[in-house]
Amino acid sequence: MSLRAYQLFLEQADPLVGLPLVVAGLLLMGFGWRLWKFCVVLSFGLIGWAVGVVISDASGSPDLLAPVGLFALGFVGFRWPNQAVSLLGGIAGSFLVMNLLGVAALLDGAAWWVACIVALAVFTGVSVINRHLVVVFVTSIEGAMLLVSGMTLLCRFSPAIYGEARGLVSGSALVASFLLLVPAAVSVFYQISESNRSGTDT
View 1: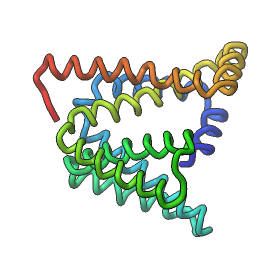
View 2: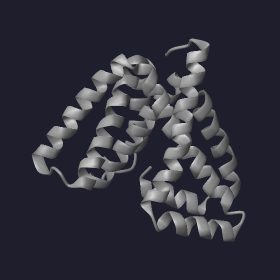
View 3: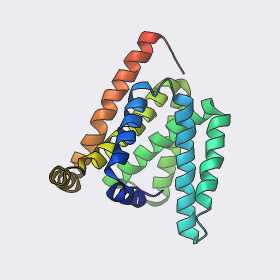
C-alpha cells in the first residue's frame, strides 16, 4: 500500500474503523517489546508489500507483486527474527539519513546512495548490539502511526473537529511530525522502563 493509498483509506473508511486502530496502536506502544517477533514479521511483510507496489508501478506489471512481497519478506521475518530485527534497525536508520540528506540537499547522485548504504551498514551493526532498543523504537513508531490514524478516523464523527485538525496538519509538516513523534517518544520511554523493571530482553 502506497502512502497515497493509505491517505485515501483514512479519508474513505468508516469512522468506527478508528477504534481497532487505536486499540492496536496502544497495544504496540505499551507492549511492543513483548510482541516483538510478531511485530518483526508484520514490519517485514509491510516492507515487502511496499517494494512490490513500487516495482509494479515502475514496470507496469500486475499488482500480484505486492502480496508476493508481503508473504516472502514476512516469512523471512518469521524464519530469522533475530537477524531480521537487526536489519530492520538498519533500514529505519538509513531511511532517516536518506530523508535528512534529501531535506538538507547536502548530497545527490552517487554520493547520496553511498551515504545511504553506509548508514544501512552502520545502523545494522549497531542494531545487532542493541537489538532490544530497536524493537522498542520500531514498535513505538508503528504504534504511534496506528494511534494517530485511528484518532483521525474517530475525529470524523465531529465534522467541525475533523476539519480543524485536517487544516492544522495539512498546513504544517511540523505539526504532523509533532503529533506522531510525541506519542512515539512516550512509548519508547515507557517500554524501556517496563522492560528494565521486569528484567526481560528480546
